[in-house]
Length: 145
Image (cartoon, rainbow, N blue to C red; front, side, top):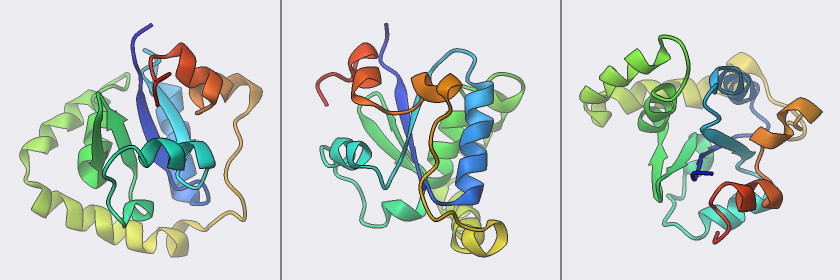
């Protein structure tokens, strides 16, 4: 089995959780694992990379050994979804300094607009294969992390 990309998200953010549900439903090629940024396994994996201090304010994508944040991460995720979502990847041609302020504005207001949970989202039995676990890492090419 080939290595998957890992999406790290704010596990208490309602917008982030809804976004992860959206990705899981459209990840027909089983390309992604997902994990809350607040979880120990996520922190352990991210500690092996030079991750920015403000990573909790962004979705973080680990793809082919590289870390991506904010709009770049979102566009790289869209590129691997089913349907017309990969067409959004063309927006990668817009420089980050123009894309990321919009991402930052939404991120800065996400709790106020969409709310916050008291605890991180738990995977349903049907979703367990999509969520980060030591077992899933070993089965998907991340055993060395």
